Image (cartoon, rainbow, N blue to C red; front, side, top):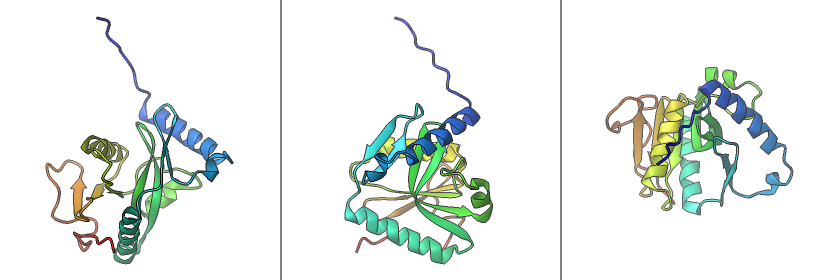
Length: 181
């Protein structure tokens, strides 16, 4: 049986490619009409998802509001485009420090993940998909990743920790439960 050897591009080369491809996609007038989420894989191929259910959006909004109130010295973003080793992925919510925003400059996509990346889990998300995004965000530089489970329970993950934290180290006051109504 033949073996397949594949060499991935360096992180720097992948980031350059991702930023260039993301700018192309943002300039596409037809794509701008799409109602939903657009991400890419590492080859620049488009991955489209329909808009999430209202409960997802409500939790996303509540997380955004809480983060804005609890961490006012940074910027809270929704649908935050982040260059990863597997293309451009969009965090449901992210919090970026002033330094991170300065590094972003006038780019349309973060070359490195903001300090906090949040994923609101949908019933259709598999555990494998969630773990892959966690790995990609940590690899891209996130300090913490928060997962909002379908029950509204928050899980706080920190790179190198063997289990979820009881609370965020960057925002310890953040609620452990997010309502959907």
